[in-house]
Amino acid sequence: MSLENLLAIQRLVRHEAGRAAILKLLVSAERNLADAGVTAISAENRFDAAYKAILQCAMAALLAKGYRTSTSQPGYHQTAIQTFPLTLAVDSATVIVLDALRKQRNLNDYTGDGVTDALLAECIAQAETLLNRARVTLGDPFNAPD
Image (cartoon, rainbow, N blue to C red):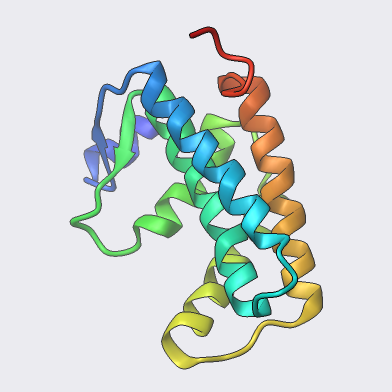
């Protein structure tokens, strides 16, 4: 599936964003990843912060390609994650892991299921990897010219 196909089925919409908007999302992802490392808060909140960093990387990468998810359609988190191979060249095995983290986030949010230490560590590791990849691909907001 291509980004154009996702546009045709209304999972994406065209959206022109400037470099500042993309870098702002990456700064926010960096902040959320830092929050995920705060051991004084619950594993569930740390997981949520790491997951949010993953999603922000996906959104920044989509913006860089001239799209955003259609938030009027259900499943826009899933769509954002599924676009990683097209936006940041993420392999399909990693997308499967990211989708499992998305499902765990849903369980946590909607049923109150807890998060294991292993799931938390995986979510943080994936967020770190994606943020680093996004920095290389989209630009490092901390080294961006003023």
